[in-house]
Image (cartoon, rainbow, N blue to C red):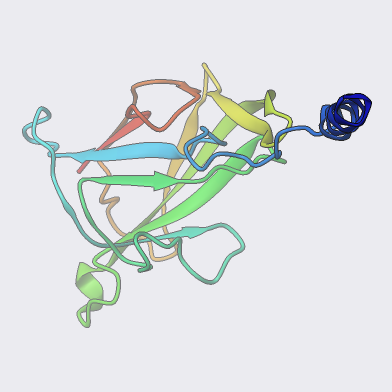
Length: 173
């Protein structure tokens, strides 16, 4: 009986120092991306698909990957914002790669924001949330080739970027 008690006591002390593994669950929300939806300028309630949209961050040579491709087609994209700065600039090129250069059109959008780090958990660490500048949330300009901007209007739908479940920016073209 004494040996059984000592054996139980040994196991109790052995496993009392164990903790659960610190593994961040893949479903845990992390730093959100900026969600942009595209709409028809002439009919603002209708989603409109972009064609061969290439999104390139300032200072980068390669575009952002959308489902493994640097070209996006559809009415919605999600782009990351810089967590270590208070602004991020993107070149949005419509009809990228089109052999007819007259159909390719580039606009530049610079988003200005404040960042805040939130503790998620010991396993996941921190995530950054963003708050677009309430006075000047973005600056929209034409690309390198001076032509008409393809983006006609930009609407900030939600200036607090805390998750990817909602649209933050609407672009009308």
